[in-house]
Length: 478
Image (cartoon, rainbow, N blue to C red; front, side, top):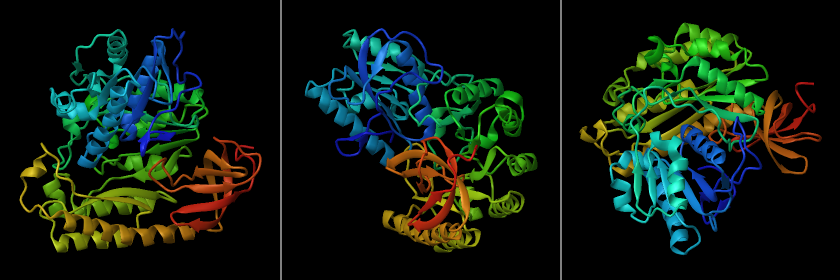
């Protein structure tokens, strides 16, 4: 969930912005005030920022507290049941504010209504004023106008998936000024049996290289030093638009964006990882040797039932090639335990693979039965306690690997991008090995530093998963 301050348990509301960012300009006309809650993944966060930019251009004012705002927008996640529960909980909290007369209306956007349309969410929560699907985000101001204008008729706005990628320029960013997510495509053509994303986000649509570069320059002009490239399937970039994958070409073009320090790659499907792409990453001073490569499993049998279109041998070959060719590589991956039909032997194969491969960063999810996905119809569904026990066992193995990796960095100097000052003389930041929100942090002691600085830090200790160190210079650029 994004971002601070925290109010009423675990609801995180986006703070009011001191000004408009990333190409958002225009005269605010005082049409009304609103609060915004953003849930889910970085791709959803980009959608939230685009809606914020659209509302700013149309004269609406963002406030940090929903209590007293003219209306509230909740941009939801519908990926797995726990995400849907969180979304419903936040929606209900906002509806309670409305019932108490402390806000005039609630608009719900994003993946949850898209997954449940037509009519599903309004039937479940009829007090919602308006519902906006994933592809209706650019008309959020029109929906807000209806609400503020006193039109009480409930409205659902669902647009079909566009034939071209959505334009994410002119966003009002809610990430810190020095880093931003850049969505290079929308949707997914994969048919993984456990996944509901294609049903919500549609087929893969590439954002043209020229548009990505324009957005990158806009973001860098706004102070961004780190771009984090995101998509549902990053390595598939370009196939639908150009007839071939063109991620390597896009990355080469990004080298010409002046002022950019780091490019981080997320959501890299193991297929289409070409030698050209590997060599480009290995030789680049800009692209971080940090690769987010969700593998989901290692058993060929399980991978086939998942319909991942890759087997154990191909997976191990790719991981070995990445390790051999990219210096100082940090690999992040995710796995699913307890997928239907997973045997004790297949789980043991996965556990041993984790031990042998020693991923620096790893997340594990126990299988979640998702209505409407092909996996629901598979045989061999396992009890929840078995799925969760396997998850916990795998995470216990990974904890020792992560601790050992962190210990190995003590005494070395790492460049750290400072994200926040937490007290006098102490900042929290990230090395190249750490993506925002999901990975570890580096606590930095020093003087004369500022948020957004990229500073060399001598690592002196590990604090659980995090590191602590001392800045050895004011700014690595000096």
